[in-house]
Image 1 (spheres, rainbow, N blue to C red):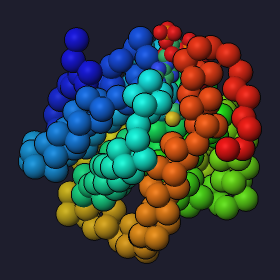
Image 2: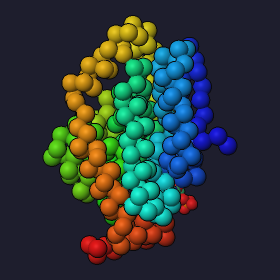
Image 3: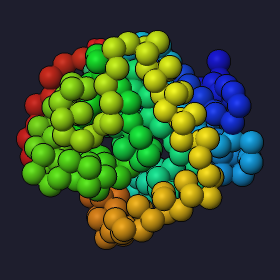
Image 4: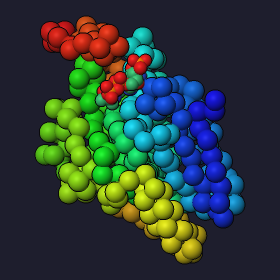
Length: 258
Ligand code: COA
């Protein structure tokens, strides 16, 4: 089964992230596939807009693959974080619009992927959050930076420090997402209508709006570098081993602060 399914209709590419047995978590292969696909979006003149959605009705993306994370060395963790950050930056800076259609859980790397996209639409039942702290780690794909940009420092810190999942309605009220829709069917039709409206406009103007908005925000290199370094540092701790083991063994983690 391909991990990414694609469908192109009149310049609009829909990408389905498809690892339903792991709630579409981003393992190394899926991340590599996304990298190739984003390259294609940049290069293929026929593609004028892209929608990311998860397979099924339960999850958009439930984060990075915790099984793979649990065995990373500090060096590999730094590499992974840098690679994910680079990919998500390519998405954020893509001159063609990219929309995240959140059909369910958008957690950890899933929330980070959504935040790197230009627009986010969610079904009522979607849940968003950065639950990495429950694993004894921190976000590594730009979440500490983009969540702060989108919802402000106070609320970002609360979400990062509690690891709490929030409802689509709460995410809407925080400005984390753009719209809430009733169900999966409406999610697809609303997202396609919105994207078709956008891609009917001048591609040159679209690219320049994205470029200008991103330029105005600046790119705080220090923040992303700190995130990758601190993400990697967490992987050396007993708390990280405990957090990831507890998740995989389906029990509550007991952290000791070492
Ligand atoms: N990485 C790897 N596998 C994952 C995963 C992830 N991020 N998220 C879910 N899965 C797997 C589960 O291990 C489980 O596999 P199994 O059937 O082989 O046991 C399967 O997906 C279904 O998940 P499950 O936890 O049984 O579903 P649930 O409905 O009880 O809970 C969530 C759903 C999203 C609340 C829960 O899966 C979860 O907390 N996931 C991790 C979220 C996270 O911490 N993301 C950040 C990672 S850095």
